[in-house]
Amino acid sequence: MSKYLIKVNYTVDGLKGVLRDGGTTRRQVVERMVESVGGRVEQMYYAFGETDLYIIADLPSNVASAAVGLRVSAAGGAGTKTVVLLTPEEVDEATRQEVEYRAPGT
Image (tube, rainbow, N blue to C red):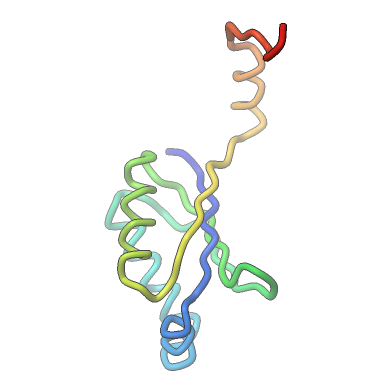
C-alpha cells in the first residue's frame, strides 16, 4: 500500500457539519470511507492555518486515492489536495533508477 497525505479544506456548509456533528464523528466517517476502498487511516489532525484537516492514510492505489478525493469534493462539504508520500527506502530506490534525460538548452 502507498501512503498519502490528504489536505482538506471545508466549505461553509462543511464547517457547519463539523460544528453540528463534532470532530470524532467526522473521523469515523473518514475511516469508513477509506476502509471502503481497501485503505486505512493512520492519523487525522485538525489544524489552524490554511488547511483545516490533515489525514495520513494507507491506500491501495492512486485510483483509490482519486476515488476518495472525487467523492469528497463532489459532495460539496470540502475540497481535497492529495500528496503521495515516499519512505526513505523508496527515495533510495529512486536514486538508483536509471533515467534518460537532457536538460533544456543543452
